[in-house]
Length: 193
Image 1 (tube, one colour):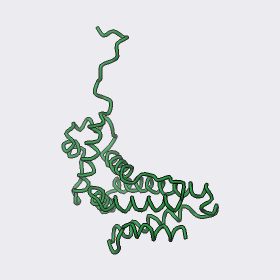
Image 2: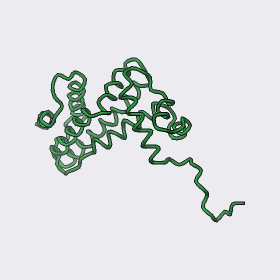
Image 3: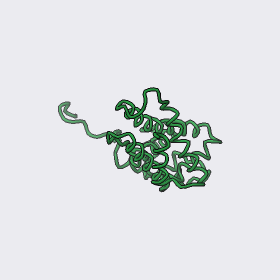
Image 4: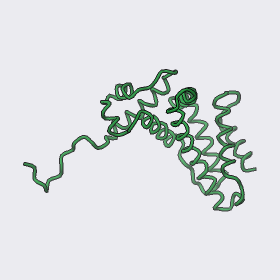
């Protein structure tokens, strides 16, 4: 009989950080390599070396795993700068966004997601939620700048966010011009004048 004063033995239900990391990394790699093929819970679990019940214990759906993987990678690759200077924060955010979008697995994963979202309503919703979270990061930088008096109170922040990501997505998807530090600088100057 178990003494109630002793700590309860681990049941395996808590998230193991190593397993979580393996699942998120596997999901992103599979999305990057998908080339139109569906990514399933089974393939994610197999690639991560865990049982699919582990995924379902921690995430309600495949889309939730993919969203968490994309959001987690974005948080790692594109930290939210807060230097106290709007121009510097926006420039740093643009550089980090542009650089992350050129690296594997983010670049092919985003391209696959965009392509497949046109055919799959679940992936379209995933794309909407992911881009909403990225928009919120840019908006937070702009709001802090406005609070410090670096932007006029009547400046349309949503329009600035649209311009930031419109620039990004246009160049990312069409590839007609670079997404580099010079482009980040030019975008920052264009947005802030």
